[in-house]
Length: 472
Image (cartoon, rainbow, N blue to C red; front, side, top):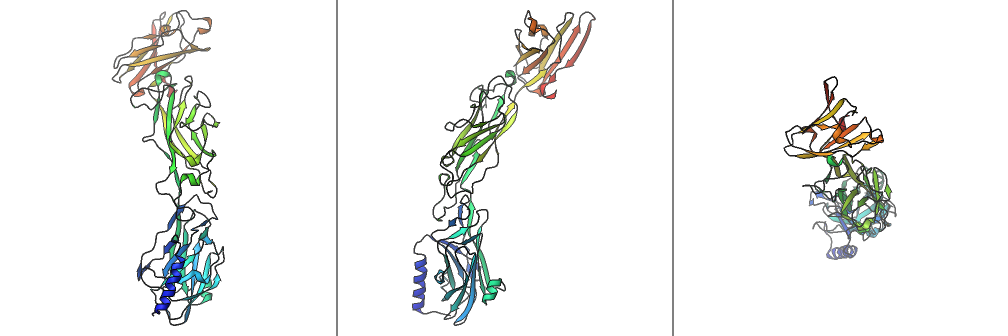
């Protein structure tokens, strides 16, 4: 069927008026015969609050009519939304003929027959074709003011259907023609991520009793002997964020997160060796932790400002042994007005602390006259390494003896006597029995330790291996 030049002019003017703002989101429903390429849905920020209107400048759905009609024939067109409702009431003027993919406009007279109120999910038009219509003729449905989304957790979809009778359109069957497409999808605006590659691994040294780090060693990420870095994190806008509610402007972290220090980063691990509650830090510009336990540090941050390569610092007290453990961070964001679909990130592993070397522990040993206690150490690391010892009795640490030394690779140490580890003249509180811990700066796989007890009166000798501290 053909329409007059005047009719085409009037239709074109109507379509032009609908698109005059130039900012309408365009949805094209695809077709295989004739070939019409479906449009890609507009991507919006997933942080937009539920029950918010998006596409506020209007959303236009374009499709071919899908059926042929004769002169003055009536058919019923149903347009339905999923996960959204109409922001404004639909009127007759919302449906017009349009040139879809160069196939020419349909000459129709539309009348809203059912639905279409603001807040409704569907509308049914009766369309009359004064001069008849072709399958390929185009229609354009304009959702003035956009749509009110139910949730950003699902895609906003639109379905176009043609029926012979109103009752069939209301019942949803049988259809003469049907096509569906997506109006909107959603994507996060920001990302909370680990910035370090690889994750920093701090080494608590055996020679310090695992109370300090290998600061100054090759590959060490420690900033001081007592200061570890257990992660670096970013909170930033993603490379391609979704649109704001108007559908024209991309969101940013400054838009969707509150401009106040009420977003939180929680770091978990082990902080039992912290010098103070303020010894765990996040970056140079974030205040010290506000919630602190031996396993958790919580930081209040200004989410809208983000974080850039913010180091998680940990200063230890130098008196408590640091365990080998991994650290992780979790973001609990607070949304700005209109952006409440912000969710906590999963925990991201940021770094770890390991231990070098090995600790050997003796059984309780004696310095009683007539008995000689000796220790022998052997390591085959290929390098000369150091060792130190900690001697304890029932009253605590016993100091005053020779408690450090070196070990050449592949050579059994000279006997380390218990007497040499003790002060020359022990005080009353420094008496035995004793337990000795050796901290040796070589790996356990290439290190051995033995305790030998000699009974000089009986002329007997007994020996036993030293225990690794982790295998007691």
